[in-house]
Length: 318
Image 1: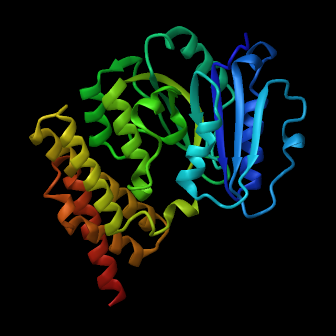
Image 2: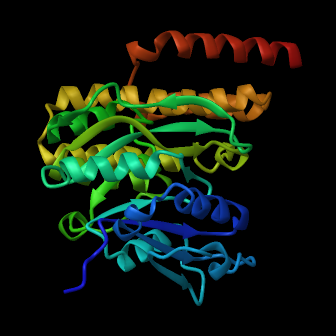
């Protein structure tokens, strides 16, 4: 009988050869010989640029691994699904090629799965938010170890736009067969929709340990994410949440206000921080979109201060 790995770490690569090298190195350098059999490494390469030789990247690696070069570009979401389709582990972790595991990440992951993998299907760990040079900007770590039942998990997810960072989530591979693969329908918000389906089905167990670094870089500042179309996708996700009947309509209505305010104000701040005033003002104006559906007391002060700052900047430029 062939023993399957406990955890498949899937890397859907696209045009970041240095990032791919960093991600793979972060896995291999953290593993002890005893942990090797528990890990499978899966790389699906959607790159149009030259990528490092996989044999060189995996030099000395004795564990299971797969590398698949897509004959033609699949696109972001399809490449995620392709990577997950090849995985054989009981659990999976999707690690983008601009993120990487922290030195104790593998140990924390495997210890948690050994202790609680028979009880829970979804695990949320902590991350370090880093810049493009790897400098830690801040840490986002669950405050304590606890299981959030589906209704509580969904409420947390839909009240905080950054509740889940991609490399922080680990789930049982068989859960994909129950809820479906990542959907193309929701554009840049497709991950939120997937977490909604996971949480509504299985809840989530939060772990107060950081396992990965989540990179915030210039590409994350593009206007592509902060536009009316994304608000439409997010609004559609909230409509899907209403169909689940896990939360009262009033709770979901307020969650949508809080979520969209946080999302828009975070985008505004990113551009303000880079002194890109016009882009910041364009994102801020999204607060007037019909999808925002009113005010958020939680974000009222931030909204007011950003509005004042933008008006002063506009007056200075007049």
